[in-house]
Length: 102
Image (cartoon, rainbow, N blue to C red; front, side, top):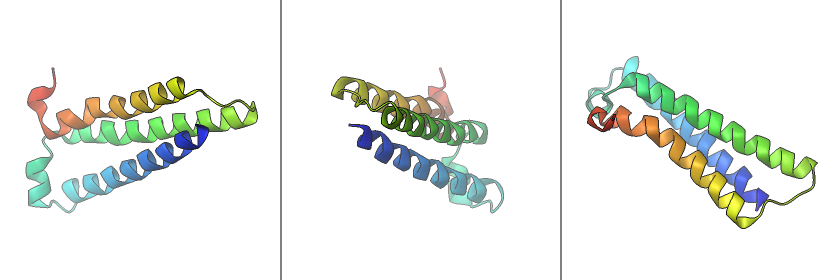
């Protein structure tokens, strides 16, 4: 199960890097179609940072489980993966649609 934490952390890190490129293309290159999609640049930055923080959390938990030589059970792994996936969506969804901000 701890291998899932590592893989999922890599996926979140890659998606955080993808959001970084979206931010560059939106703010500095000023691609018009991205400026129409991205409604709140500030929330996009928050989502980008949150994906990096969640991947750091997953990497830390993976390293901790390897160092202490324990394998997290299936339920704990699913809850950790769910939490680290849903948390950044709280910033990503308002970045695309600010009407959902409440």
